[in-house]
Length: 248
Length: 81
Image (cartoon, rainbow over all chains, first blue to last red; front, side, top):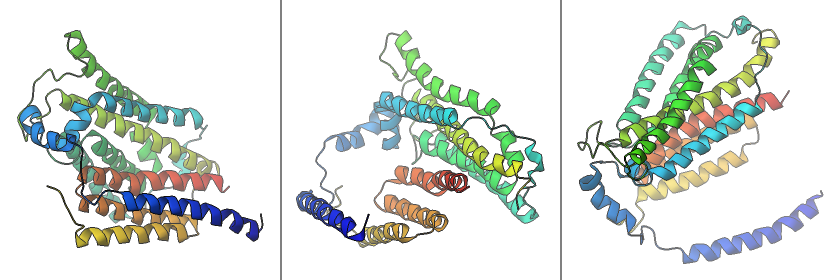
């Protein structure tokens, strides 16, 4: 494709898209112009009604907990697809890799960092109904803190922690647990995901009632799903290196 | 409460995000581009924080600086051979 044809295709497209964009920008509401009633309603009713001080998490895991279950399964299915696509690679003993981090400073500081960030991640999940955070954010943070093990130690240490035997049950518990908490309410003749424990005490770890379990299930599911993703991708990277006789 | 006007801090971070996105596009080397993209991710984290969306900022912090770069880096490493 010559430069001339490229420009001939680009300029009309730019004119149309730019025109439409400018047209819509002129008509958008003013900054901060919020019309929907739901934000105002929720801001007023969440603490008296559900005893949760983080309105965002109360919406995600309580008011529209059913939708969130769908989102959780999107992640579950996406990761399942990745596992199917990136098949298991035959690998010789990766201990030959010689990728251990040599510097003791990096290893010690890194190991401490793993501990600290795992704690922060668990805190994010646990206090999801109190402060910003929740199962999704905390789960992602948890998976990333475990990934630090690969960065500061070695592939062998990482694969000892994040392997199928550990992750598959965790992913099952995370995805299935969410559904089970919802179904328990159905057994009682109540709507799906009804809060059976009643609202907890505002500002505490149990301020979610039975949504607390839903939150933890989501945290476990997100962490496990991301770790499966990381380990599948890292395997794609490591196995050819191990075959080639170690890192350079 | 409705925020009727943009706070100077909000203007600043919006402009920084525009600059960051442009920098990502203008970086030609893919490995450098991932680093620049990580910095752009941090700018988005600050943007979400400044616009009072800490829950979104927390997600972006982890996904934009750890998960996404890892997946893209490995994809590049595999396809270059």
